[in-house]
View 1 (cartoon, rainbow, N blue to C red):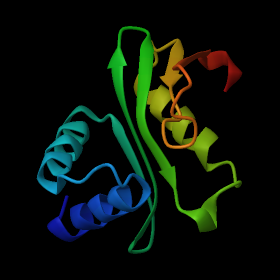
View 2 (cartoon, helix red, strand yellow; view 1 turned 180 degrees about the vertical axis):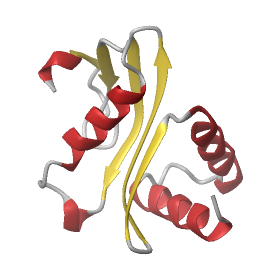
View 3 (cartoon, rainbow, N blue to C red; view 1 turned 90 degrees about the horizontal axis):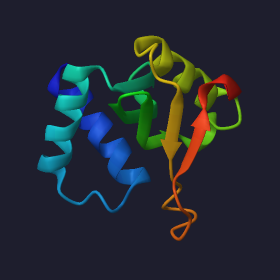
View 4 (cartoon, rainbow, N blue to C red; view 1 turned 120 degrees about the vertical axis):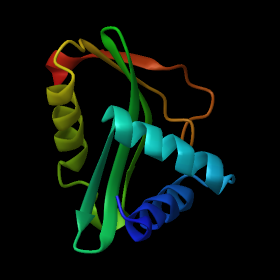
Length: 116
């Protein structure tokens, strides 16, 4: 991945997740996720419009980040991202996530993939 694209991804994530203040650590994480194929990035020409990162632990894919640019929300992109990720890891049976930004006191949810 070229440095300009990586910078755009970092900018996008820091915009949507302001608690990611350490850019170097975030960059290291993104590079690891690229290596393990546990990140999906959707771009529209030169613009990042969505990023989804997860960790896979056995049959559970734990979604770490899922952000979609405001202009592209409510168009089914979340479902497409999750389905694309599940194709990469066919043994995953559950998705785990929490909505920390919107609901900081809720517990993680575990959802069977057949709901997608």
